[in-house]
Image (cartoon, rainbow, N blue to C red; front, side, top):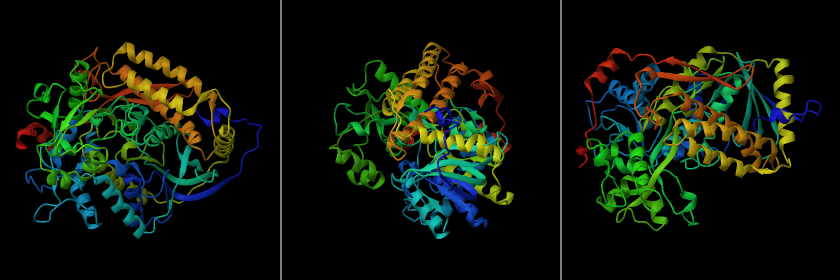
Length: 598
């Protein structure tokens, strides 16, 4: 559904809705939303409400396996926050916002110690310190971890802390539209996914912590009801700008499965954590060659994710892939006890599927994993729409053209603190929604939602979702070119027309939820395709076969905004410059030598 407003009948009665007044509305209950709420509570802001689309504690954060970065220096004392920033900028091909990068990296040692104090179950060294492992493209061991279930352990610690502070939380609520006049945000419209009741939130500040947009692809590491572009699309519709949307990280190692095998099929594309390679896992093609020696003899399997993903894609394209379109990842040279200790969830998952990681390799292939782009924000996480913040994977700027593994969880807790402090300093209560916005935005949205429910149509919601995901994989995947991108945009326009004729169930149904999601997905998909067409170079996760080289003239960010009349319009801006300590670290040229692992 492109927008419930478009099916609203202005003459129809406005359905009943509840009004909730709150000073700060947090949309998203993963690590970013939870850490922001904690900071607000610790700063004395009590009138806060956290909304989640799922049950409390069941957020996409729990699927982050490998680790969280911070220059503690546990294993490598010569590491520093400035080198961490330099690695982040290098991995982002210098399209990152240096100020946002430094905000994250300078904080992270303290954030890790804080999480430790709150009871996060970190893996530890023999002398009891927080352990740190190698991760791809990092100069030192700075990735702290909890086995291979770091995200779950992180969110558990944050939820426990939030409950200690009695932070209000409402689960199973989906937001469909923000109430904004383009200059300021006043609240949001949504519905209770269990009861079907409509809700109007009157909020002085709105924080979007609703994840990214990787699930617009058919092979992805998210659950199907997550990372559909909710956060970026809601912000864009409210008047905020999107940035760097063309940069989508394809993780090198998603599960490659036999699509005809009912036991394995649900696992297609699901993440095989980078920790497997960080602990020494090796990649082999179907001919038994350790092929990364050809692509990256120095860093091997722990080169940047975009490098490894393209190498795997190249091996498959040239006929050296497995029957399931992947390659082999092998850690069987390590002992079973080592694998069980360091990678317990991975070992258990494959063991349940009849594969013993300690005795045989597993099949992997690239899969859409993370959107480096998102909502453009300032140093506090605030958009150009007053009172509207975006943090975590919803925001852009930290990761540039390619994300450094272990930085996603770091970003969530770092900017949760920054945004929370800034909002607390602003002060203010729920505010007042202008009558005009109630009449011209909120009420038409409620009418549109009511009319969307139980609607007859020619197209199944699930089929249109799949068509969109297939379109994006084919036309904006790992390898891109002008002709294919243009064809993708044409198909996207045709697909958008189909959304006017969807068959939708009641408000509490999955089809209703996904009918809303399709609108978000279309916005994200269009921005990805337009950015991919406009950026006539190859940089990081964006690879144009017709422009295979980096173009120094393109060290610029692409911004998208909603035109007053018509569709999406864009402009570009040059990136900023790092601080002296970070530039000095860049000049030193620190780099991981993979063979330290051998």
